[in-house]
Amino acid sequence: MKTASHRHTTLRRATGALAALAATGLAAGAATSAPAVAAPTWAPADQATITPGTQMYTDGAQCTSNFVFTDAAANVYLGYAAHCAGMGAATDTNGCLNDSVPLGTEVTFRKGGSLISSGTELGSGELAYSSWRTMRDIGTTDENACAYNDFALVKVDAADVSKVNPSIPFWGGPTGIDTDGTAAGDRVYSYGNSSLRAGLEPLSPKTGISLGDSAGDEGWSHPLYTVTPGVPGDSGSAFVSEDGEAIGTLSTLGLAPLPASNNIGDLERELAFAQQHSGIAGLELALGTEPFSPLL
Image (cartoon, rainbow, N blue to C red; front, side, top):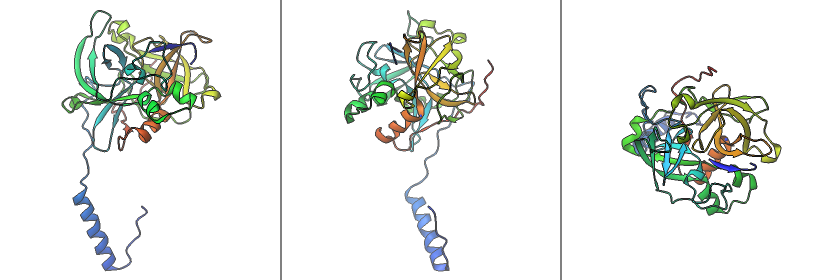
């Protein structure tokens, strides 16, 4: 996680027999020429090894996956922070000014990574989209997008898709995408997996409260506090609301004026940007197979 001081036909009825037959024929022809693509089959939640909260390693840098996504061709993606694939310093937080590793770079999914070990490999994929690379390529100048659109997608290798479940460990969900931001005092839930915690799963579930959205960020960012705070390695991890809707993805650790707070990028805006610019047809959030349960 970066550190910074500041910082989601009408079909007309045929009126005659001939028209009805023609419509039927067209429908049959369309079905023959464009067969439906089967949706991915998820691993049972209690057996899946690749899920939200999985450790992700890119050229040695470790981050945490947020949500699972699919596309029109039934490919499966794991989301994380774009800066995890960045090539700059830890203090570089402007995605429009910093370069990233190339698309196609291998990313590995791991368990139990720590400061002395990269843990056990669970599978792998390749970088398929980076908001940072994309904003540079298209010349984005919106200051809030440059600062907070910190979202990337890793396409899971076909051989590892059978290991995936989209449910957030411990909490369940997501149940959908939040579309109205957060207000001060709103409860939030997350699941981090920093290697600084030595892969200790009891330290991964986190809950906290929103500090209220800043009008100046135009909905791109949501500052909040959690217990414990997100730390480097938690970057990219998922945040959901009290009803399990996906709010955003962990981007930065605030130092001032709100020490130990975190800033999360708004998933609705990040995903909409990716849908428009990634070239991935039918990109959408995969809902959890397990119900959301805010136990704490």
